[in-house]
Image 1 (cartoon, rainbow, N blue to C red):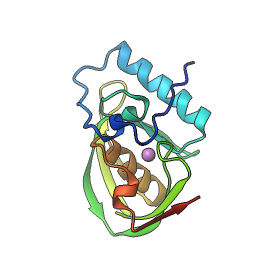
Image 2: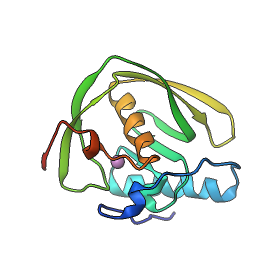
Image 3: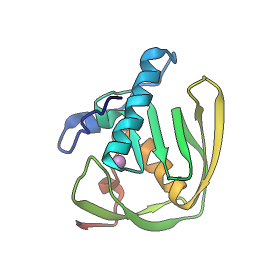
Length: 150
Ligand code: CO
């Protein structure tokens, strides 16, 4: 078990664009495992690799009911809109209201290199959009209609 330090603003790494994973090797699997340990230690909902200083397209989400790991994830369809509150481990003490697609379909690879498609709504849809944004250096505060101190 290894818990990484989660990078916080104004760390510029959070603003960088992450590179696609070309080969799922032991190093990538170890990063995924350590991301899970870190997410649980921080009691977060999701984590993207750039938040721990690794500029690769990896995200994990744990809703409590469902644990998802996605490599090279992308949103392939969207429907509806919902405005709700978000926070981020990299932006401590701030929450904001953000408009997101209510339903999304996401595609990526699992740790076995198999292509997976996830249909998500509400919380999971929001988490997928939030985490995938991190891979392009986008934070929820960039999209928030309003933010406030928690
Ligand atoms: Co975040």
